[in-house]
Image (cartoon, rainbow, N blue to C red):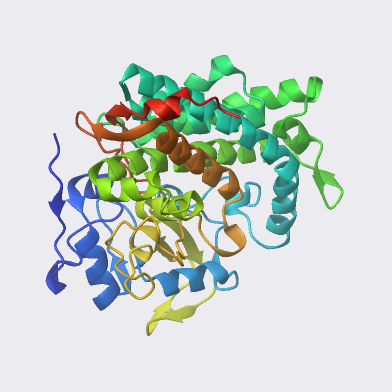
Amino acid sequence: MTVSTPAPDTPDALDALDLGDPATFADHDLDGHWRALRDRAPLHWNPPTDGRRGFWVLTRHEDILTTYRDNVNFTSERGNVLVTLLEGGDAAAGRMLAVTDGHRHHELRKILQRVLSPRVLDEVARTVRANTRQWIREAVEAGSCEFAEEIASRIPMTTISKLLGVPEEDREYLLGLTKAALSADDEGVDEVDSEMARNEILMYFMDVVEERREAPGDDVISMLIASSIDGVPLTDEDVVLNCYSLIIGGDETSRLTMIDCVHTLAARPEEWRRLKRGEVAVETAVDEVLRWASPTMHFGRSVARETELHGTRLRPGEIVTLWHASGNRDERVFDRPGAFDLGRTPNKHMAFGYGPHFCVGSYLAKVEIAELLTALRDFTTGFERTGEARRIRSNFLTGFATMPVRFHPDHSGLKEVDR
C-alpha cells in the first residue's frame, strides 16, 4: 500500500518534485505544493529530469484561462498533454480536434457538434438514465460491489460506444485499452505499454472505419465519414484520430469523476445528507463533483510566438502546462476551495478546459454524473468504502482504480417504479 505524503512547499523545495513523473502524483498529496506555487511561483519552471525536457507550470485560475483564450501566442498543434509534448510533438496535429487550431479546428468542431446534436444526445441521455438506474439498483440489492469496475467503468464506456457504434462484445477490450493509454492501474504498466494501448485503439477504429465505408449506419463514425471540410472529405485517418479522442475523452473523465464522487461522499456523510434531503440541486452538485475530482490534471500548450508571463520571457517551442488540479483550488476564485460543498455557486471550475478547446463531450459527462447522483439518492440511504481505494499512476489523469463499496438500501426508493 502506497502512503501519500505531503509534498514539500518551502521556497527551496518547489523544484524538488518532478511534475512529469507519474510517481509524484501517486506518492504525494500536492495541495500544499500547488498553494505554494500559486502564491510564490505562479509561473514555475519544472527542470529537465531523467532525459525529459523541462516545461513551464501555470497554477493560477486566471493565468490558465488567459492562456486557453490565447491562440496567437500559444498552440495546441504540437501536443496538448505532457506525454506527447515531452516526446516532441503529436502525430495527430492538424487532424484530431484537440490538437488542431485555427480555421480547421473551427470547421472540425462544427462537424463534431453536429454529429453530437441535441437530438442525438437527448436519446443517449435517456439510455444513460435507464442503464445507470438499473445497475445501481442491482448493486444496492446485492449489498456491495467493486464500484470502479462494475458501475463507473460501464456507464461512460457503454454511452460512448453506443454513439460510435462499437459492438457490445468489444467494449471490455476497449475499456482495458483506454485505462492503459494515458494512465496505469499499477506500477507494472510503463510508457511502452501505454503507447501500445494507444496504437491498438487506433488500429481498432481503422478496421471499424473500413467497415462503415462499406456499410454505413446511423452512428457517429458513419456521420464523420460523410463529412467534409472546405469541400474535402475527411480521410480515414481524420476519422480514426477523432474516434480515438472521443473514446478516450468519453470514458476517462466521467469514469474517474464517478469513482471520486463515491469516494468523497462516503467520507463526507453531511454532504451526502444534503443531497439525499434535496437541500442541493443535482445540477449544482455535479459541478462541485467535477471541480473536486479534476480528473484531467493538466493540458498543455507550446509557445508559438515570444511572449511574456509574470515578467518572464517565453520563447517559441517551449512547453507551458496548465494545471486544473491547482486552478480548481485557487483561493482567488473559490471561497473555501478546500471544502467539498455540493451547494457551491458560482462554480467556475475548469474540469472541461476553457475557450476554443472546451470539451465537446461536457454535456454527456454531466448527464452521466447527474444520473449517478440521482440513482444513489433514490436507491440508497448512504454507502461506505469496504477496502482500499488504489490510485492510478499518471501525470495527466488522477483518480482511483479500485473502489469497493457497501450500500445501505433505501427500501422505499427501491419499491418505486422508474419512469
